[in-house]
Image (cartoon, rainbow, N blue to C red; front, side, top):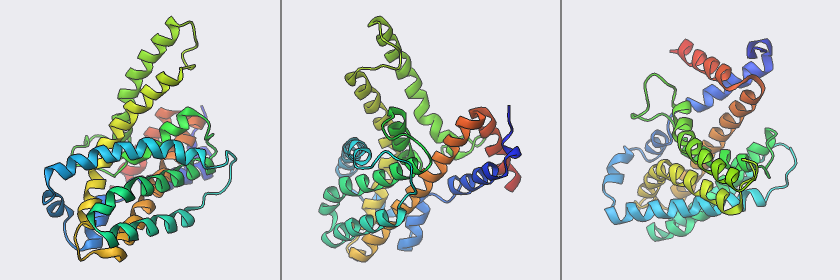
Length: 276
């Protein structure tokens, strides 16, 4: 099999993706912006609010996935990250100006803008927006908040996050394949209801991780002194972060399709280890 090091451009793309995916977490970036540890603000939130955020995040991911991919023309072209940042900053300014209650109105809007930008990047990397797997990959981006303390120290954070979703998806895929086989259909030819079950399971898994960083975002924007300016800044930082995660993720997936999963993962880890 061809080695990625034999293609200098692809190898440079891999190194760039490693730089992106090994960057500081979104939590660290929020703390730097507001000038204090975000954990204190999160701990001050009422439990009822945290639970409400969890439900709102899951609903926002469901709605945004369909709306975002539907709104883009399915033809490979360069991504437009700046335009999406402008949209995100505008929605963040509204949330910051009108306080905590407005954040639940802002969440589905901001998530759809971010999801659309993620899909835009997927398209620029040559992925088919009508393919069900592309929608899955777009949603997976929102599980990538960076390395966490719970991550296995023997792995890099990126591949730990991917295993977080793929384990559940492999089990569900097996279940759906068995259903399809009993119905006399191809394993890949799932019905609408089966695909919906798959997507609901994936979103539930991703929402568990994305909900953590959204709670941190809400906690920061709930501080009265932050206001519209920092609300816009937080949203811009958020979309910038997930645009980076999307670029790294879809670059890795493109290279895995060309060179194989095991080879790219090995080279990814080699690059990380050689920098430590």
